[in-house]
Amino acid sequence: MRLRTRGTDRSAAMARFVAAAWPALAPTGVSWLGFYVAAPNAPESERLVLAARAPKPACSPIGLHGACGRCLRSGEPLVVHDVAELGANYIACDPRDRSELVVPCLDADGRAWAVLDLDSHEIGAFGSADATALADALHQAGLT
Image (cartoon, rainbow, N blue to C red; front, side, top):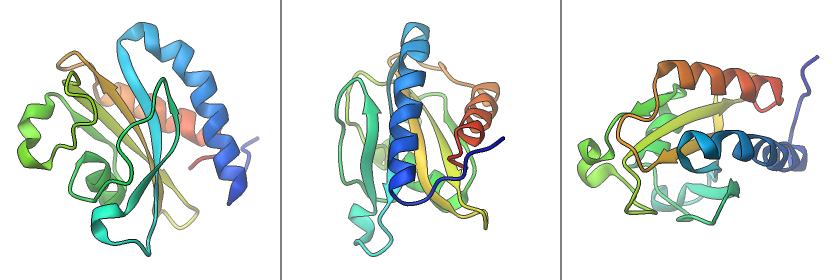
């Protein structure tokens, strides 16, 4: 059975997801994971606000020009093999990060209301299978 989440329930579900995922993903080379939630009434440069994350805070708020914003707008997972390829469109919260995976959290109408962002210090750390597995995990957690 899938748990439906809304409002503050989403915040709790994101916190539970991070608490469960971080210990499993950190040993695999993930350097950071967290959620960015859409703030639809904010200026475009501040449209995504950091929510649950591990192991440390990150940039917040951020704009829609980066990988997280691209994923939010498209509603599709985004695998970034090498963040250097993003050029000026990369938001570097940790200069050691070399690759990124962003997976949208979709509402019942298929609109992204948040994204799950993972970073790694290794180039090519993520692939499409990782995106699929995380999308499934978000679904099981009631976040999409």
